[in-house]
Image (cartoon, rainbow, N blue to C red; front, side, top):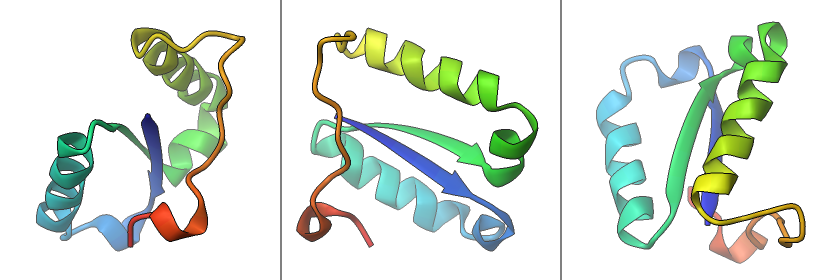
Length: 76
């Protein structure tokens, strides 16, 4: 149960909302990793390595089934 969040300038000033959402997700057993859009554009390897390490830490390997949450279960 890993949530990968991508954000940009729209998150500036909304740190409290982000922290609240993250706390709710973590209370449901999810791990949350957050990246800025520029991280994806400028250092995709770091982003993918971080996601992979988080998957390994959660006990997910190459044989695990990874998929996004169904629409009805996605946070808003």
